[in-house]
Amino acid sequence: MASSTPRRAFVEQVMGMPVSIHVRAQSDAGLEDPQVATAVEQVFGVLRRVDSVFSTWREDSDLMRLRRGDLDPAEAHPWLAEVERLCAEAERRTDGLFSASFDRAATGAAYDPTGLVKGWAVEQAAMHLRHVPGVSWCVNAGGDLLAGAGHATSPSTWLVGVQDPREAGEVAATIPLRSGGLATSGTAARGAHIVDPRTGRVIARDGSATVWGPSLLWADVWATALFVDPLAGERALEAAEPAYRSLLL
Image (cartoon, rainbow, N blue to C red; front, side):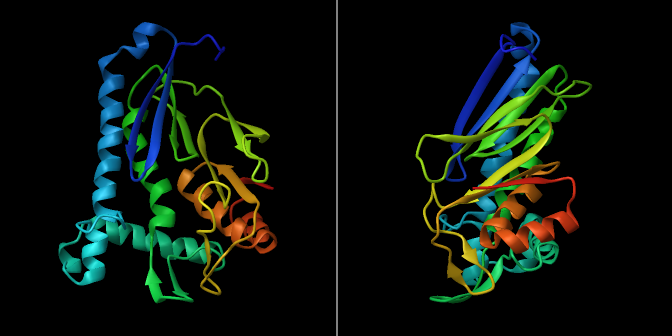
């Protein structure tokens, strides 16, 4: 679509980060369609519900209640079991470079699925946008993006700038994204927070790994894996997921 295509953005702070939904349509009337506003509110509603289940900052989340033993697993939200299965699959696909279960050097054994939850949650929530005809959309969740289009609509191209991890405010590369997900892992935005599951130690080096392809969930998983071990991660990605591309900085 041309740059003059009508566009609207919706922003909400949810899951501890800013989430923005950008919508394009052929006309202003298309953006004002009540289906657009309804779908956007449904997206944010799903993300708020995900936060209530998986947040590690909310004492009343299902995840934290399970950790404390205050919630019977049989009574927990079924999303927890689904995400646990996906985490196991992610560990298998990445040859152990991504894991939700590892021995932390300081705190001992731990289970933390939140490294997978964001991509998974955005994909679940964005299903509501896929039902709106005549629009193209892009969801930006803390710098990770999922793009697509509504029913019977050709997706437009979103130009995604990848930040230079060593020069604040500088764009190192621009990647066109029409449909699918793009995720970046590194230390520039949040500092040293990524753990190498093989050692349980936080990775303190600079740099970043960006991965894009059909699914935001798997792009996010692979971006983490490539940042943990760029060489082994690239080999595993090429062998397991040829539809994805990567950029290491």
